[in-house]
Length: 77
Image 1 (cartoon, rainbow, N blue to C red):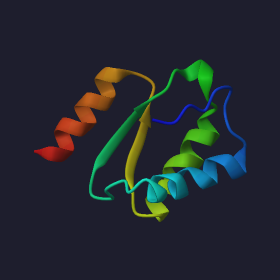
Image 2: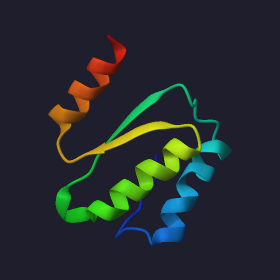
Image 3: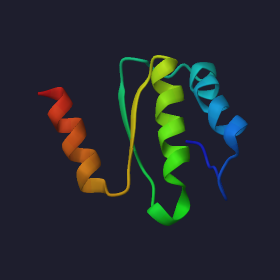
C-alpha cells in the first residue's frame, strides 16, 4: 500500500511505477484505484494512468467503487 497523503507532484506521479517495480508488482495484474474526485485532479489521474500503461501496468483510476468493480469484472470475462 502507498499513502500519497496530500497528493503528489508530476515527478512523484511519474515515480509510482518505479515503486511498483521495486516491490515486484505483477504486470499482468489488473489494478483499479478508487480515488475521491476531491482528492486528485483529472489531469493527474490521466497522467498516472498513462505512465503506468507505458511501464506495462494495467491500471485505471475511478471515482467510485462500482465502476472499478465493473471494469475488473468486464476485463476478466
